[in-house]
Length: 243
Image (cartoon, rainbow, N blue to C red; front, side, top):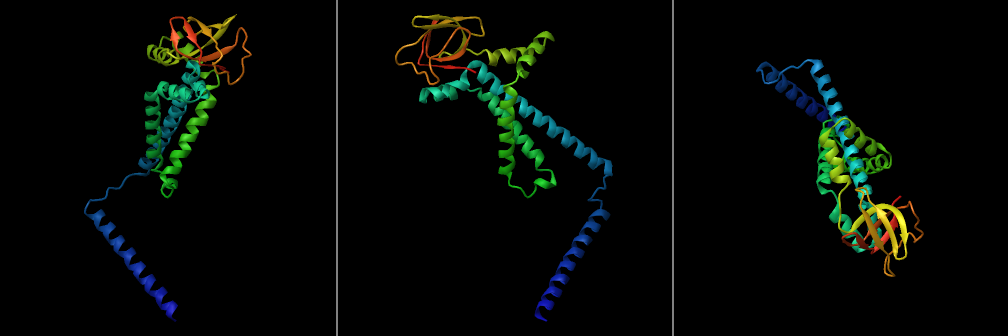
């Protein structure tokens, strides 16, 4: 009897609350405080949000892959293997402006996703981690293809100044201590490389040069040399293949 009495009270209280809410909504409608909108308005809103989400997702993928692309082209992604000095050069040489723009896009997509009902009860951190992993994994996969090389050639052929300058500005950056190029000649004290700008550099290998992946270099190999440049000469602190 006691349980039945409690259930009855709960039902009456809940019913009273529902009636009160209904009365307030009806009163607001009569006073013109609530505007009725047609069904197409909500459908259009959903479509626009979906299109916006897809555009943001593709932008995140493109930007992340472009960051990986320029890190590979400049050799920056290969230098952490050389220890503390390599990690320091890696962080200093990162395109932080592009990384910041990528984070902004991820934040915008996160805000957009929060408008969907399936995301209401999910922690914000879960979506941020999922989008971030998508950017890292997807960006790396796209960067290993010829997509950005083709985009660069396309922008040149169709005279798109902004795209050409962007690819040249980031993809052909010159660093004082990171040098990526193709071996054109083997010398007694090292080898000679030619970089993407057409410059030839004489690489000197000493007893203290780090060779984490071995020293089996030959003509035609693409390598990354880590060391300070003095005119056309680089005394290598470390050398590794760049494939």
